[in-house]
Image 1 (cartoon, rainbow, N blue to C red):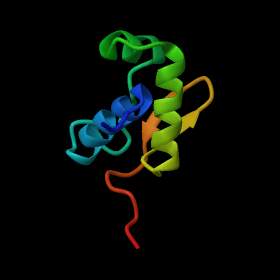
Image 2 (image 1 turned 180 degrees about the vertical axis):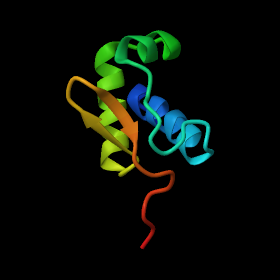
Image 3 (image 1 turned 120 degrees about the horizontal axis):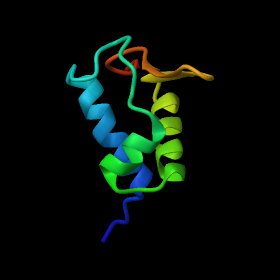
Image 4 (image 1 turned 60 degrees about the vertical axis):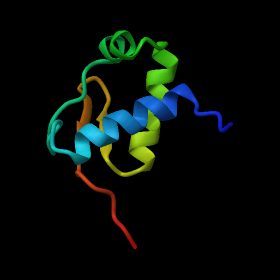
Length: 77
C-alpha cells in the first residue's frame, strides 16, 4: 500500500481546482487557516501543500498579500 502524505493530498486537490478553472489565473487561494479548516489539517501541512504548488509552477506567494494562481497547467516538456 502506497502512503500519501496529507500535504500532497491537499496540493493535488488544489491543483485539480486550478487546472479545472475553479480557481482562475490571478485568483487568490484562501488563507492558511481557512484551508487548514477546510481540509482538516494543520497550518504546517497547508504551508507544505502551497510550497508543492509553487514547486509545480501553479502559484506564487506575495508576502503579506497572499498566494495567487499564475497558470492553470504546468509546462510540459
